[in-house]
Image (cartoon, one colour):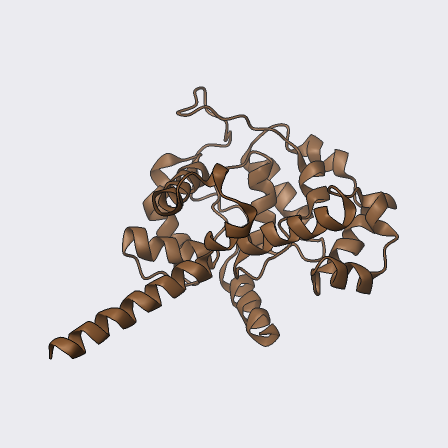
Length: 259
């Protein structure tokens, strides 16, 4: 499984450069004079990094892992711990107690960098006060220097900071494009495909994608806000893939019986 994750990560890193592509957007300012939907673009990098919910850059079952990590951390520490609280923890303890695996080392390194002043959250937050191509590119470059921050994680963090023109793509995106848009996307083609589908919503491509994804799951499982934690595992690409596999097998079995 580790080899598979590493291979997935390597493919994603080599084929998915989610830094800014200035050719896709013709305007320097990403904040238009009007908003097609009500959006509060809060710049909260510090809080996002403290939550450590976007470190899974492998692109495999990200939502399931995020929910599981949140639940485990809350159970062990009571709430999301501050960088100072995390910085002095033993890596093995954190990995086993919170089921973080290899990510425990990255979390500790990030927390220690913040505590020791090597990572200046306030400076990063200052850069993103103006949502522009230049500030996005600058932030993406700085975040990519942090251990564990690949293209997917950087795009997720920047999305949480109010940059919605880049869609972080992973296995869930591939699953969604196949089931909803009948596109057989791959890690090599997914960026082009999401641009074709959601480019018309610029600079809010991610919001359009997320609303569509959210609606897809609510049609199947009801209101997600009322979903009990024990059912979070349902909202994953792997769960939907398994459903598709079972449906395919049942369809083939029916054909055999009819024959």
